[in-house]
Length: 354
Image 1 (cartoon, rainbow, N blue to C red):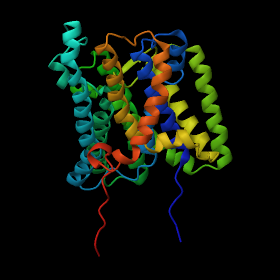
Image 2: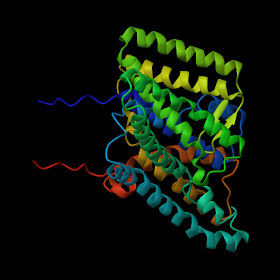
Image 3: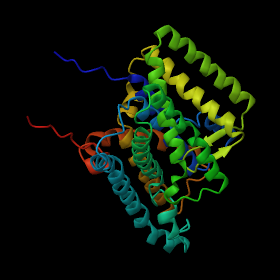
Image 4: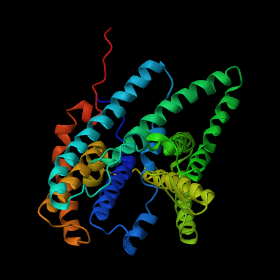
């Protein structure tokens, strides 16, 4: 008899939407349409989607404790190794075109600077990999913070220890402070504290709605979504871009808006038992493949055209070509990449012998 808990389709759906948004954003940027008015509106209403990966990790997390050496080794295998390998593969695509582009245009088109290696969390040819190093750093930091928190509050009542986790909710202001200092941390790790906030928010939301009835969760979630919609209309300049840890507008409004929409959307979809939406959920279930694969394809497409003297900048026909083609190729690559742990992070779990 199969006693496995059914997969939660709500978060796969939300992560699928996030990947669709991210890939579309990169295509629009490469084709010179990122600043189009209608697209800027799309971004303003969806800027929080990248946060769902941290929020989801916290929501389903059972514990970040345990043996530190084994814990760090596991996170390095699942996040740090794919960060390095997919980044280097993207770099190989990028640098393989440079001789041809320099021959034609007499310059590399994009500035090549050594400080990029340590100042940015991304690679030439696959810049979205910043997310993996930030995700890894957030996991490691929260592990040691949790160990310290439990040790500090050891001997206190369970309620005191439980409420001490609220300390994590000041972390967004650390990220904001770093933003005011022009994001000084290397590897673009200025966003890690926001990542920990989203992680802890997911854990807190899981505990809260676990105590509520389905009806109450739906009602509260709808209220949160409506609040976000109204607030985003009124404070339309408030947003947060996680890739470069950029805050715009009032930081308090931004944090309130992100909190309400993350909890509201996830709570509503969980409580209403969202069924599996075939294409979107497939993308969410295999988000790592789409995440690490799409950007080198964009580079290949862009540079191949430039080598023949044709720019894709300002062209909507290339947008219409790239969106379906990249998603189709990524979907085709899913079984192949997921068989390679150092690309996908899907290492087989060890089965303890009895």
